[in-house]
Length: 474
Length: 106
Image (cartoon, rainbow over all chains, first blue to last red; front, side, top):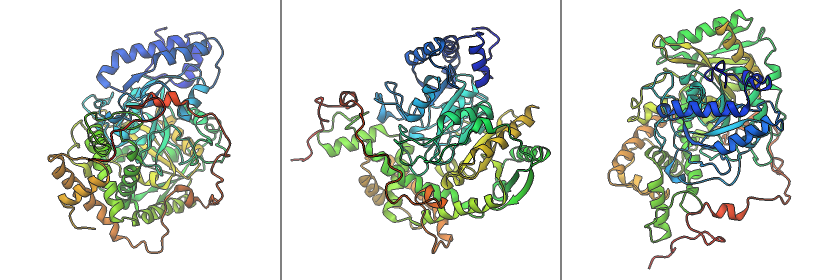
């Protein structure tokens, strides 16, 4: 492994060039990543399991010339809520300890078909429930940019691993902000594709009308390359969209001049950290300099997004998580002598406090009839559809604050849930979104800017994201 | 909807969800549920009369509703996951069936 390759900044095209030029091999690049994981990850704790055998077998197929796809030899990590045949899948929960899925998630199969080398499974909040990665039953992840701070959640391991040079890209999932928020906290790119754009087959479900799979990368162009591989209909996922995906990487080079950028006033209110506000305003100025026009827009129901989300997501979770009962996989409480006791004791031992809290809340809202939440969801979606009649994309903050300290919010669930204030509305509406690094605070903590676009307009969204990123590095 | 959730209600909901809460967990969960439900109560400020409920994103996109199973794949026989691979994941099995403790208490 030549010293010239810096794993912390390596992009997908740079990795591909290093392999195809003979400067390195897929096997050497894989080994270099495992060496770095061994050296750095004890401090960060982003990986829960390594899939060495599978990774080196795949790297050998790349080096032999058998695999030549767009990700051939590129080392990638996978959030531990996605199935990789034979590799542990815990969803960050004790209740799935010892479970080795006997099949691959569609996204896992697609990455490997494109030549990617899958290094292992990345830590996350238990069943993807959390905004800080402190809810993992296997211990928290630390933010590589500042070790006493959280990496965000729930895809904290996926964001931290990319930020720390422990994989070139990773897969995460986003139900209420779980890709965009950790991407912002760790200073990497995170993309939430439109609901239905990327298959969820093989994803351990949290809230099925909201769950989505998307990539973490170091550049916006890398995210487009990943999306080209991941997007598309899947006969194994009835919620995947039958419409053909765009050519995301190819469309990246179209100029942004003439695009109409909306600035939603509700996302710049009280509670927004002033340094984040200033950073986003600078990004807007840069977009204007690139020929975009800026327009004030209103998304009037924004303040109802968090309560709506916590009704719908928990109701769906209470139903989805009923499958964990100690019968077919994972943990079983041994001492129970009847079936009913076995269910209860397995779930009691297996689930952590936040998961129990959400199951209880979801069961309560279902039994008490909070049906109006689905009507408010329609109102929130109409807000976006109306805005996208006037503008091509929205630009706003991802989070109200930069990464907070470990333990800072664990005692107050409402405070923790309000972390999601700028991310959940897009989740409920099903539109696409992304977080793009946008400078740092004076304390050196990363700031993310959120770009949102209409359903299936990922190409437009990524062009705006790239313009923001390019202007910063220029 | 705004009345506080009592310990008895928490116990009842835990029962419905097949969760067993310890004596220490119970008051903590009641406190948290009340805090979260207090936040959720602001939804009642909105008058959503006449707004259709949205359960799925596709419903809002004006795309044709799948009424004849268009979203589903063809019902053809495909190889599925090998039974032996599935059964080895089970906590207790005889290789053909999942084994569980007795269902009826005496």
